[in-house]
Each structure stands twice: as structure tokens, then as C-alpha cells.
Amino acid sequence: MATLPSLQRLHLIAVGGSIMHNLALALHRSGAQVTGSDDEIFEPARGRLANAGILPAAEGWFPEKITADLDAVIVGMHARADNPELLRAQELGLRVYSFPEFIYEASKDKQRIVIGGSHGKTSITSLILHVLRYHGRKFDYAVGAQLEGFDLMVQLTDDAPIIIIEGDEYLSSPIDRRPKFHLYQHHIGVISGISWDHINVFPTEEDYREQFRIFAEMTPKAGVLIYDQDDEQVQLVTVPSSPDVKYIGYGPHEHVIRQGRTYLLNKKDEEVPIQVFGEHNLRNISAAREVCKQLSIKGKDFYEAIATFKGAARRLELVRAGQDSVVYKDFAHAPSKLKATATALKQQFPQRRLVACLELHTFSSLNPAFLPQYAHTFDAPDLAVVYFNPHVLEHKRLPPLAPEAVQAAFGRRDLKVFTDSKALADFLHQQNWDNANLLMMSSGTFDGLDLGKLAEEVVR
Image (cartoon, rainbow, N blue to C red; front, side):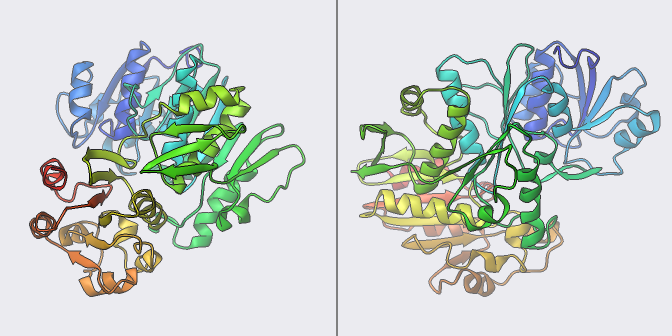
């Protein structure tokens, strides 16, 4: 990489992480000498690192891997501040980067487009990448999900003039408590929406919102800030405060829905069929269109590309479809994502019964102080189900959760709450799936529930 000619020998601490192993593969592909360590490496990271010849020989932390001839060490968020390899790197005075710091260093000479927001950022980033690739544009990227047609989630090249970055607001590394999206120093920034999350890091809604205010104010002279103009929290942080910044608000794209299919309406009121749906996706499309305008993509070219976009992995991802039923899975777990996803599927198929299941899996979602944020976010489904594993609460050192407390927090007396994955599976198998849809939402796996087998029963 021309931007980092001096960094050819690199070691990644916590190389098994989703984004970290993709960075390792991208660096290896660029010709750098890459090593790594982790205390646990699962598929698909294990197989992908092995195929590239850079899978660590053994799991664990090995300070002896950290030698003075390394050009830099990159530390992932999964590592702890007292990690033996990290301590050794600090002792030797090596350059230690967090993931976002390294991405910035690698893209200093590029135009940086950073997509931030509590929800929608992966989809917006995916939409932009799809359009640029469709039209043969050169670009680099760093995105949080595996995308169809892209073998890696990170790409760093010498000649791409721009980089599209999904800007996570979570902390950068165990030794850098700044949000990741503060470190990229965007030229074009997007804020898709703000809904309090990461309660373990940002204990109040104000603390959380403040991170987005800082991001907005980091927009440089002649920079662009694109934001959801209907989001009340976003409105609080995107007040036009600099005459040298271009502020662009957006809402849901104009559209029609017919027979379970959504069509965009362009400026000529021509209908453009798309393969995603829901108001949140219509907002995501508007955000992507505004970014693409700034990158000189013409309207007709944007719509031509969008018609072929199938969506990001695990974002309203179709598992199985039939004549009178569909099964979707989604990464949704935060309150705003849950509400948007469940509402989208009900509105797309209003005549069908919707059964929706949510797994409480993250620290915030299982925290009694945060649970009230879910009030009435799960009203759209005809049958709403919540699952959580009590052992996960123990692992995260959280107090036990009573099913009655979960029911009360969601504000639905008919909410079904399960704490055993087999009992959940049995319940779902017993449902009548005639003219009914199923939606499974989690950042986990419902403790190994066989969704493929369940989908075969739903869609006959």
C-alpha cells in the first residue's frame, strides 16, 4: 500500500474477530507479512485464515510473537488492556494501532466517506458499494457485514481515490476509549439515526448522543453532512453550525407497494422495482442516493444499479419463500432496529399473520436498566416471542431476568417469553403456518436453533 510503505510486518491481536480477520486477509493480499493471535477463532474466520496461510498455529496469547522488528501491531476490541502481547508491544515501544486508527492511516490520501448511525449504517454502506461497483468505479472500503459479490469486508489499495467506511460508534480498542467513527476524519459523513445503545459504555442517552454531536462537528470545511431529517435525536446534533459545511437532510424515498413488491418512484415518477422493503430501507436508499450524488453518480445510473441490490447479509435476509409464507432472518436486536424490521415485514404482507422472534443477546438488551427502551417496539407482529438464555446473563455478570419483567418492559401482555431454545423450537413447530410469515431477529443464533429445518416446515 502506497500510503503505508513502512508497514510491511504487522501483527494483529484478536485476529479472529469478524472485521479483524478481514483486515488481516486484506493486508496479506496487499503483500504485507501478517501474523496474528487470538484465544478463540471460529468459522468462517478459521477457514479463511487457514486458506491464506496466516492462521495462528495455536490459540492463545504469545508475547514472544511480539518482536522489535515488527513495523506495527493492530489490536482488536476483543482483547483486554492487560493482554500479554499488547503489554509486550508497549514495552518495546512499537506502534500500536486500533482498527480505526489503522484504516485512517491507510486512507490518509483518499476521500473518506463515513456512514454513522445507530441503525442502517451497514445497509447504507452496502448500497453505496453496490452502486459504485455496478458502475465500475474504483474504491476502497471497510464494512461490518459480508456482502454478496465481495469476498472481503475490507479492501485497501494504492489507486482507489475514495474509501467507504461503516462508522461504528463503539469504542476503538481496549486502550483507546474513543468511538471508532471519530478516528476516520470524514470528508462526507452520514448520520442515519440515533437510538441509545451500548449502555455498558454510554450510561445515559445524553452520553450516547454526544458522540454523534462530536462526529457532526468534525465535518471539515467544504465537507458534507447527510442526515435523517425526521429523526428527533439526529436533529439535536446536526444543527447547521458551520457556513463552510454542506448539510443535506433526507427522508424515506417515494415509493409504492403492490402485491408484496416495493417500487421506487424516480423524478419522472417512473417505477423502479427493488428487492428490499420497509420504511427503514427506503430511508437507507435515500441516504445512499445523496452520497452517490456527491460522488458524481447520476440519478438514472443510481436507480439502474439499485434495482439489482439484494440487501446486506442478515439484514431482512430471505431464508425461504413460498406462495403464502416467507421466512426472514435479521440482525436486529436494538429497540429501533426491532421496531423497524418487524413493522416492515407486516406492512409488506399486511394480509398475512406475522410471527416474530427476538433473542435478547447483547449486554444492553439484557440489562434491566435498558429493557424499558423496548416498550411498544414489538407491537407490529400478530405473535411476538422473546428468547434469552439465563447462562448468557451469568456470563455477562448481569442479574437474573424474570420473564414477567421482560413482558412488562415490552408493554405486551400476550408476549411469549422463552428461556429454553428447545421449548422455543417446539413452540414454533406447533404453529399453524398457513398464510403466515416468520421473522427471526438476533445478533446470536438462538443457541443453535436449526432455522433451515424450521423454514422447511413454515414454507411447504
